[in-house]
Length: 226
Image (cartoon, rainbow, N blue to C red):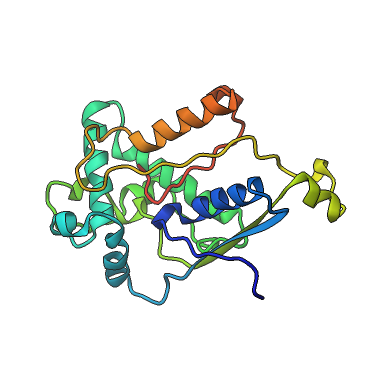
């Protein structure tokens, strides 16, 4: 008890922001920092939960688009993407959903571990938006489920590792970190590009002296198939 602590809220980026702040704390002189992420979503039904999550958008300006705001905003991006790249189809996105479920089937801790979903099943998944323009561009299977979960990571300095008798060979070294915020108060100029993520990643790679080809594993937030 009585150790320095803080609570961070940044919607889908909360866990990443906690890790970023943990690295900053180590660079500022702390030897050992624990970053923890916890989320409980199952206590609310889907309709109520969506209304809560919609507050992470520009709610006053965008809430009239659809009752399920975030699925509608991503359906809007999907529509733009399919128009720009006509060789991509909703069937291709169904394959992304099937892949996600298959990964869950391999993880005994996954919420949907026992649920099977084929590409054909994802293609036939029901549409649910009331916005007629965006309705065809998202199905139930294109969306992540409401779920509960938690994760934790420990960040330590070289001195901290020595104090605890931990070998560097058992650790993952942080060679760079970055973050950025975009503009929530206006629509993106290019719907087929995640401009903020692209800008921050390019900046991070440049600072670390790395290229995209140097990255062996990328963990990408995938709340929807697009």
